[in-house]
Amino acid sequence: ELKVEQNPLFLSMQEGKNYTIYCNYSTTSDRLYWYRQDPGKSLESLFVLLSNGAVKQEGRLMASLDTKARLSTLHITAAVHDLSATYFCAVAASSGSARQLTFGSGTQLTVLP
Amino acid sequence: DTGVSQDPRHKITKRGQNVTFRCDPISEHNRLYWYRQTLGQGPEFLTYFQNEAQLEKSRLLSDRFSAERPKGSFSTLEIQRTEQGDSAMYLCASSLWGFAETQYFGPGTRLLVL
Image (cartoon, rainbow over all chains, first blue to last red; front, side):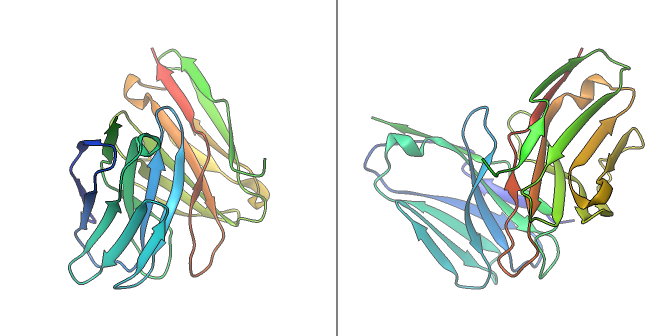
């Protein structure tokens, strides 16, 4: 059974600081997703990582994937308040297909002034 | 707005009643998924359709749950004889088969069973 673990689960950081969220998964997969969820809202797709060594960047967020270590990271650079949200990583159960996604428990990020 | 839509957005029901939720995917998407999310957790996969065929079902989907996608367009999720443990956010997502396939989520239906 595929398991996905994120850490930390809660993160408070000051504006302007950098931090990294980690996502470990238990079985082989070549497809990993990062989503953002604001309170009471649905999930917004941020990144899809499709191969070992993949790196994607959008604004202050950068995601990377190491399939050998079964590890993805979401790096936050110079955080701003607007980044406060819960971030989920999700791993596809079947190679070559999005199909069933297994989500981590999420990292609740709060950016303080 | 051409995103995934769900109806209703909120539903309060009494234990033992039946409820039905609807999901309208992005029009060109051939894949549709249902997930359930409880407070403080990530979404959990329930079931998946490719066009009108239901191809995967989670063990979470007990026999009180049924999902359909007639004609490969909208989908419905019905819960019969609701229980308090069914209280959750029910999320629908759709995707278009392809190399960089991404699931796009709807706003969800929040169910409260009293």
